Length: 461
Image 1 (cartoon, helix red, strand yellow):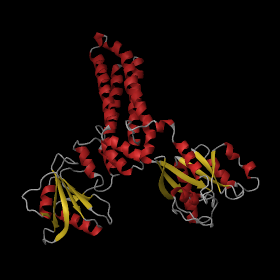
Image 2 (cartoon, rainbow, N blue to C red; image 1 turned 90 degrees about the horizontal axis):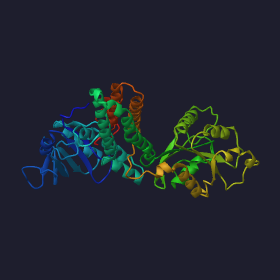
Image 3 (cartoon, rainbow, N blue to C red; image 1 turned 60 degrees about the vertical axis):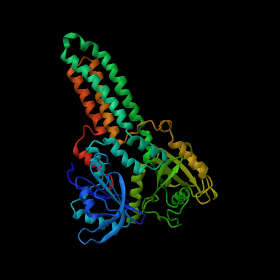
Image 4 (cartoon, one colour; image 1 turned 180 degrees about the vertical axis):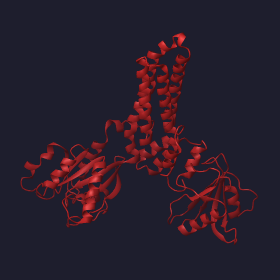
């Protein structure tokens, strides 16, 4: 766990040419450091909390003016980290921002680690762990609904659901412990059936609902979509057509695409992370072989596959191998080059037409692209995804793992209560379930997991 007693600083905006750049400082020396480097245009004795003040950042050693800035000071505990926080709004540019940051380091601040500002907000009790993770979701959201869902989580939707479950679990645990402490009052007999029913109805079933809401993650994360096919089937042309821009190089030379080319576009508000991959075939070239290996890896990981078949050429073994590999995956067959005559015997040999949903297009002319988008929409928008609204919690992978383990513990408690197992074992299962629920919000979690979560953040957040 990182120390919260020192003062940290970092550039909070992306490096590059822009109107402004922001440097954030948090910790006990924030105000002291700010007063050493900042000279307000209108002299005043103290920087006022939650006010923007115009002035100059100066080198305290030479007195030279570095830049004209706006500075904001937010006194603890009314700040993002619940510590004293200073933000310097300067002009942007790597050299300028790095120069100001170097001066702050000389005055006693240290460089913040990735996510350390948000980690301090969590450690100081301003947000729980699920809200902290929602900050990453908000920054990475690839659709408008994804933004809304992430904003809901920041406001505590998952926290509220989890806390409601914890209160019910604590209530039933108290009854189980009463059955242990007062066996002569027949409390245990009453608990076994009524308590088991309560656990199933008020803990197991609601957790099932939360876990099932994971389908809504596509609004935040997007659909991992991979274009696969033999060489020169039109994969790169399809990518360019879907994006309406020349993202991938298109030539008649086999093996032009040797690496994975990735881009994002939306269909009905759902983001698709779409990847153009190397054409599959037997090769001797080492570079192309590595590209094909990467293609197979991405194909295995894909949420949706677009299998490109060139109908102007006879189906060959490469086509059939690709179709066989995708048999048990969510996939669409995209029959390309309908602007050209079909190869001889194509229809009779195209047995895949009965095994996959098929759409005919011309990536060159754009014919059939709207039909393809509709087919993609229908393939990915299942009823459980459509049912996700802004009032639903959308747990991430870590949350789902903790919820599934908690569910298993609560279900065990119910089963053991009905089977006359010792009440101490029932109570133990309930306590274990409570601990796993606490992992969602960070009430029961170890430092290694915390550091892993916050290491995914960018510097300055």
